[in-house]
Length: 469
Image 1 (cartoon, helix red, strand yellow):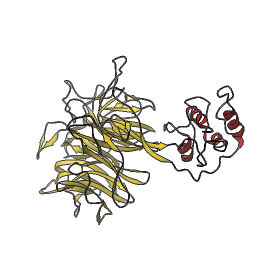
Image 2 (tube, one colour):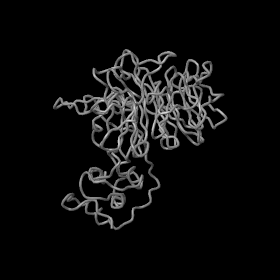
Image 3 (tube, one colour):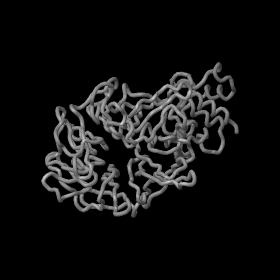
Image 4 (cartoon, one colour):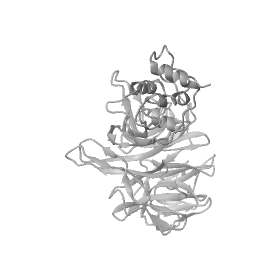
């Protein structure tokens, strides 16, 4: 039996009573109305969380996590509410993840993109746990060195962790960077700018076999590994100046590992690879094309460019698949005289690149950028350094979600009793403002007016107000 969406005590109106009496009706099949997507508001400064910038996004255990250079002060109390490194979204606000991830003392020793605080720059899931990588030394009082795991209640490390970096062609005792993480064939792969893992020299990519860190044989002796992906059963490694052990003259931007031997991928158009993704059964690669940047697909033998170039002189930093389309994101440059908008996000329509929302930022001669993309509960989530996307204020993170069509279920241009007949089927759960409904996409499209992904009494009250307009 479907629970009626309201009671006479809650909504003593004729409309509510009519819809309640219709509870036994089966909602008509939704055919005409189409659900549209738009950027939704998230937060503005000053807020409870400050992303400066957001550099990594993921979903773990149905929760959204963000990594980057983070902080937050409650404007009412002045008390810090978000610790360094990462945070998780509870549906209404960002909150800490355990003890958080930190630099050693004094601040700045472990570095970050701003060289001042800890930053999580990569996520993955491995053996059921959330894995975070980046520029940090400690999880609480535990030394973890650039990589840590979260089981939902506490942080742990992976041996001695990752250390050092390459400056030019030489390994140095400098700030470690982890750019990407992946579970490949039951092993955890870490890629970035480091030269040792677990005390052994590995170059900028290493694998954790469950007991210890090992190189990808024969190993890389220098370079930067920016992105990794599994394709046709092989591990694909993208980066810059990747140099194989024993072959110092052989440098590449793309390599593959079959579990035993690391080899360069030949024939590709890129001198440097910045991001990797899978789309329509092919590997999508973004990278450097001379003085500009581009995106291409690779089926294992043939390369196909998607358009000519994109992003100008700025790299494509993130790739994602959303609603069946390939989405790319990166940097865009603001005019130094005004708060101007620029397109940092684009989508591939099968023929060319199309803007996917203007990214706005503050005055000043510096780039805004989108550094991370993920899909969470049917929405596209973007993170980076910006103050808004589209027409919405979204400081450092933004949501692209479904926009309801105002309750007009049958798409006849009116909100009336025939539309109300769909409510009993769409709305279920306890009759409280924060109740969650198990709903179809069509229900969300039509009735979820606040775009929060749930149908509740707020949405129904809005429908009531529109009734008969």
